[in-house]
Length: 312
View 1 (cartoon, one colour):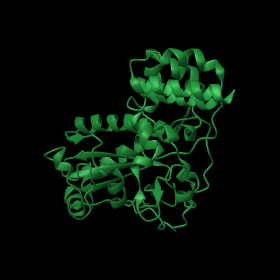
View 2 (tube, rainbow, N blue to C red):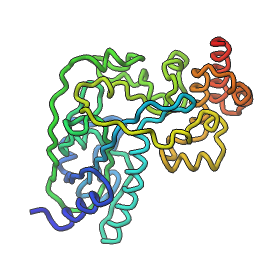
View 3 (cartoon, rainbow, N blue to C red):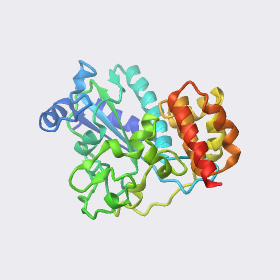
View 4 (cartoon, rainbow, N blue to C red):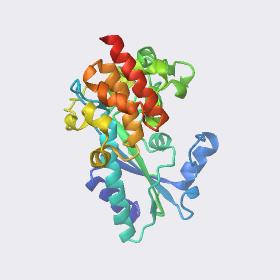
């Protein structure tokens, strides 16, 4: 039988809106890391919290969005779901603290690997974790705790990747390979998160501001779930993104996360979206952005102006 703290913690997490939760003892994670360490992450939870005894792995499923309006920058549903889950994570940490449980919410552990260990699914050729119920449309968060707990995996059904090659063929930047996995330097989403898009990839962005999802949409393992309307797409109108006024930026940061809504990144990528639209009404704002002290914003704006002029 699970200790009361373990059961109560999982029940509390579910009450806050998480779709599922599992506890992994630190020793299980460390034993796995000895064989399969993940570069760039803390593979031992005790690196984050000396008193760590377990990690709570939290999953939040979400539906994809329908097509966005033409005058908006598209944002993947992932960012909205991730931010909502992170807010819930902060509440959960506070609630546990009030019960005398230590917890560290820094997202520095290899979440996909811990998700697989927790039974949330298998990793496919597109490097995303997937299961039969949610496909790959779910967000993972981790919470390091000092709860003494046996493993409490959820055991969701997931069939191995079929090696059908659809994601490899669909990726416009050839970031995926049947043999080599993900080539991060070619991944469009990776460059979006960094805020500077290499010139050969800018046209491929089309109206995408944040996120790609191409490999998810073509995957035969993606269940036929109903899509939902984009959440207030008018808030991501291209002109508002280009102007990037402080109050506006704080408002969208509350919805997609402050890291995703960094001002220079938003402006730089909005410039590309404006350029891909071919609409001359954005030229006056883009001209001003070419004078930006931020090198990337200025470069993207110059590219966008050239692209609009060519498309006239």
